Amino acid sequence: MEQTIQILDLTKVYDQGTVQVEALKAVSLSVPAGEFLSVMGASGSGKSTLMNILGCLDQPSYGEYILDGEPVSDLTDRKLARIRNRHIGFIFQGFNLLPSMSALENVELPLIYRGIRGEQRREMAEEALARVGLQTRMKHKPGEMSGGQQQRVAIARAIATKPPVIMADEPTGNLDSRTGAHVVEILNSLHAEGSTILLITHDAGISVMAKRQIRLMDGHIVGEDGSGEGRQVSS
Image (cartoon, rainbow, N blue to C red; front, side, top):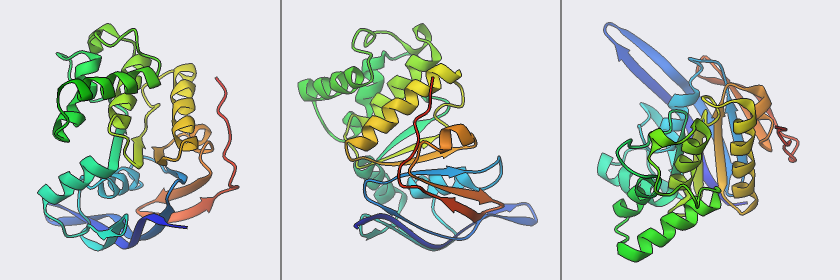
């Protein structure tokens, strides 16, 4: 099976004054195209650092990262930004929506960065919002929406460009269990349509929705599970 993501001996070292901290320690991992993978670990385990590197938001100190056959470990920030915009959609715990913009305008942002203009951009943003059930809330600003609605706007923004890889960092962390289950359903449906999903979470109940789960501790992969089926998360 084609490998979308391959990392080999990935290490990330942060300088904290006179002390060096290894957030990741020689991590190796392959993620086939179309897989649903969850990365679980406690705070400080290295899971967010791993996602930042896999999402081309940061670079490793050592090791190799290949995304869709292209080595990206040593690329410039400009080239990494281009790859992010082409390959990856991000969903964050904090939503990261611009409060002065409507839902539609927030979703249009990555399309602007892609150089998509006018009517086509508007149609793509409207399609993404309808996909997450917000066709009647497109003109509302984030402050006029619930947390669950804001997260669905963030999901629409992530999928508007139809990226092959979606990375979700604690996407249910600020939501109640019922609303979080709805977000989980959306991720499941995106996976069923062929998207590669990487889910970062500390919640074991959310993690088991993925077909494969890995566990990080102190910068190492310390366990892996995968029945190949995944589980449904009830609301």
